[in-house]
Image 1 (cartoon, rainbow over the protein chains, first blue to last red):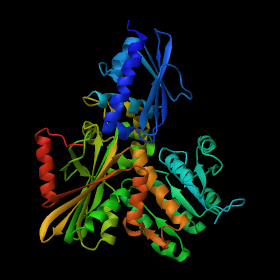
Image 2 (image 1 turned 120 degrees about the horizontal axis):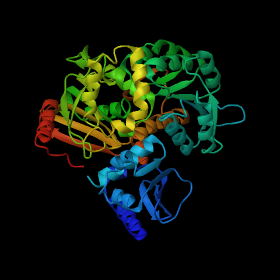
Image 3 (image 1 turned 45 degrees about the vertical axis):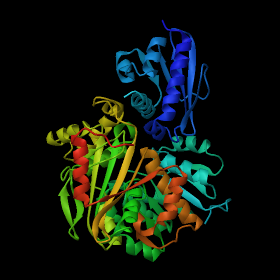
Image 4 (image 1 turned 180 degrees about the horizontal axis):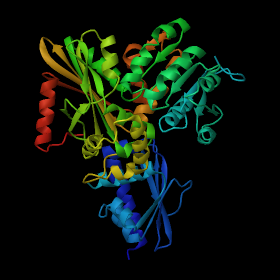
Length: 117
Length: 398
């Protein structure tokens, strides 16, 4: 199993990539969301805070209010946010659970896939 | 014209709890200087939205199919913004209710047949002193203004192509699905050689270049209001054709398959199919190799002469569908009630009534980026270059 700090590092890389990607910057305009990630095997929750048209910060704790909740093993979450795993495929396999609106689900999916084409 | 207890002009957003209407409500509330009523059939949802928007926003029930319900909610308002779709069903009902109530209207009607019926209300609107600004969204709306801007830069007879790209990863509502099914299953007006003709939807394909991550697309004719309205305001226009395209690319094959199977040849079937498709939009966004970008786009290409030589001027915008569609009507309604736009009774399309530069400045202020391109040659030359880029697998730089 991966170390929880690896997920923090993966999310920080995700934030930096998002800042440098024009398509992603367009996709998150006016899309202010707190995205909770819960590692089911590490007893921890991280939050990606999207605000003011950018991935504002990632923090290793829940930030309220929660708009989107993604649950999976530490390895799966790291794989998704490092672009090694396809979130839709993992969802279909049941290794990751997404709680939120269908539109938000599509947007998260689209953002991840356009960061690691 | 404020309501009781408020000196601010009231803007009623019909469909205010919906996908696009809620964006209009938020935009109007953030602009200030108006009282906003989020009116919706789903009044609980409208109340929840109003609670997050401060004291200037309140919720109300409305049934857009019932003239008495519309009259009640419009009473005392300065203007209304209609976001209740599908517009082929509701646009002229709402427009007529506004005329009867003496309330100015901005709508985002994107159906050509409904727009023609709205234009027929011109005499009644003039008589009532009411201004109806129809089709002030993404396409029509931004598209018309950009095309008119490009046309103003050229001489001679003008040819205009307008193309939109919509993504299943960027859409949610049932009304937008019904609109697309309506737009791709009928003959649709185009303006060719100085006259209107009907072209079958999904034909007259043309390659059109968009920035990454959309890239070049082979768009096709579909039902939209731009070819209906643009020639009325631009007398030098020789042709105006609107094309559309859905992402992911594979959706085109699915749509054609549904048509071939006879799944969308009646209104009832379209209704049933829209109900089935809405919950599976997330899956449809994945039918290709990757997931479709959660972005939509519009491009207006106009060719004419510059210094005696054929030139094409293009304007394009890429953003999310919600922002592209929801910000323009809020800007227009705000301009209307605050005096930034002249009130001219009658029915108007965006290219006829909006102060273009002020309108585009407002969009820029909301971070909607408009890019300009200029190239040698005609629309055919432009399409040829886009086809070459697509054929070579070369993507268009962002």
